[in-house]
Length: 148
Image: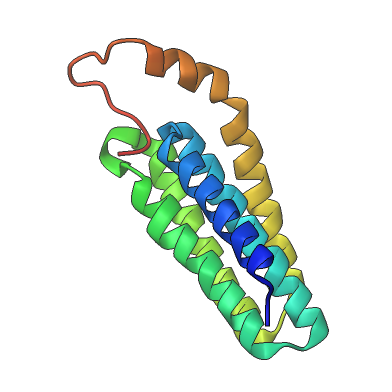
């Protein structure tokens, strides 16, 4: 079905992604999760518009996994205080909206989720300089963060 060159290109792309993840800082990993979730939501919207039920469900499931098993699981609610608690609640809301979007075949709910993820991603990227500065400093005993 695919030429050997095509499979080689896919292998090269996979290695590039794996290498990018392996060398990424914790801050960059969260940014990659936001990007992955938004990409999955965009794919779900495309499949919804095209009437592709199976791929739409798969894309929404992928977005849910990224939010629950990536973003939400990375939170340290105890050390992150109120901000982490609010993010935890927002991630729960996003998951519910994704489930509703899938059941109701609602593009507007997918658009809403993408907007929320875009806002969070933008804020996360906005703190990158501070995150890099803090990462360069030696850790103080008892210091906490939003992520584990």
